[in-house]
Image 1 (cartoon, rainbow, N blue to C red):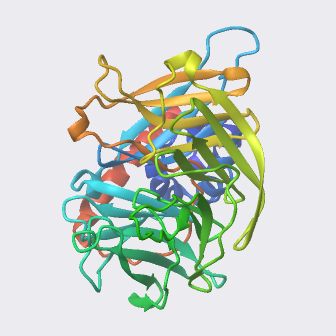
Image 2 (tube, one colour):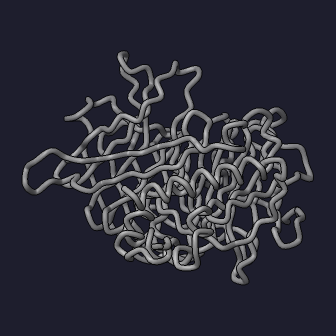
Length: 412
């Protein structure tokens, strides 16, 4: 009888290509060979097909994402092919609403929406999660980042921001250490401001933010608005670095977002509030206190959607494909006919723009702009103590179903 471990490698790779991220646990438990291939082969095959595999937040739900850019620029002049697959995650994540998501090193940090008082860290590859208990009350505008130091110790940074007392006052910085399961208050006196919607981007264990110098009010009540900079939080020194230059002049209502590229480079998107052109830049070198940039793309959106079209300054997210010289910006279509329908805007060289609907029609008062939190998922072997014991049985049942799905794929 032929065993699953006896299947030809090409067939196994095709199976792994079809398996969702959330099924990786079932793949790993099939056999030792599949466990190895799930780490070494699935990502290589996805990259060869110009696939972006990761996670995104959509309508306050965490979703798995597979975005295929194969054939976006069809040289033979045939139909273009862009195939997004977005699926809500089950188990824990269909029971709670998620307001924010952050990622680093294959781990996802999720903040619940209802009361902003619960944090959960999830390792999708090992299917492990850990609930994080606070030492202080959580607030609506608190900000977070997840990273690791040079010893490989993972940590969470938290900005405490109580705007009911002072609209712009961040009164403390705390850090959570996974190894000790404890919080500490950091001795930081900031000379900068980071807006609550700036989620930052993780790169090599650290997190980079778009920030500005702290504003000083003049006697007449007016003050010049300072431009924004790039600012790094170093999880080894547990401190912020110096201001680094952005490749553009970014101000408050301009669209600006950061994205990491395979944990090697940082990409920055910019669109001025009074211009229709979108710029994307990529780092050629980046460290905690130094950075250099190269232009990647520049596209004028006016010929496609009019002069007033602008990406959301408070919610933009994007990812890029360096080889195909293309970027995907997650946004929404705010026309009268779509009622804020989620969309992905694919932009490329020579003014190329293509809009791909993602569903999710809502009134603006109910709307949650979709966010890509991880577009190039890399499996992580970081162990997280699983405290959600109540989901164990359901998870086992799901794994049995996934095993059956995998066996059906071998037959088809």
